[in-house]
Length: 281
Image (cartoon, rainbow, N blue to C red; front, side, top):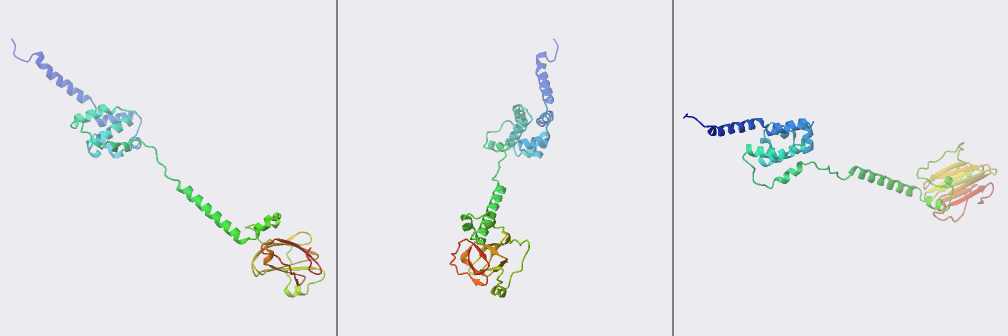
């Protein structure tokens, strides 16, 4: 009869060695996550962007440092999130964490905090730039329309009567210079108007008005707006054609004599004058 341990007595010690070997063979949580990340071809930055877990926390967890997580509940949430990102089953890692850090904690209402770490579609706010551009365009259009209405009050009446494009008023119309400008006769010259020519003087006495004047060949010699107080004189060898945008605002003199016509305010008048006594053609 020998003194010593029987094979049955040695089995518990063998089991303890086997368990210890298994513990040593099992990688740490951080090491397992790091190896899975590398196998998936992901960088720490990729995992951080995908999970919304800060890069310093990812580095710390892969180094098995869970102090930066802020507690067991947050550490478990980060482990679960990172494991899913690197295509690893999180349950064995959570079990391992519980074995190493005192088991599973009691449920807490902190779980919704980890929902924020999941990838969420980017929220887009209102497109304020497009709204501002539209508002600016609307303001510019309103200002342009107001200026057009103020500068050319007789334009609508002119268009209503079906005037040709050459007779219409444009908000950007500039005073056209005649191809062969002629000096305007003075008042004394009008008073003693030559008999062999027709001389027409237009004065904006009661307001502003658009004026167009052509010679006997139909050539435009003036196309523009007279402001109140302005005058314009036209002279031709035989005939002057006039279009008055607001005839009621105009005083008209032909061959030195005032035309006594009862032109109505806002009325568009088309007139032709020749040599001799003032007589509308």
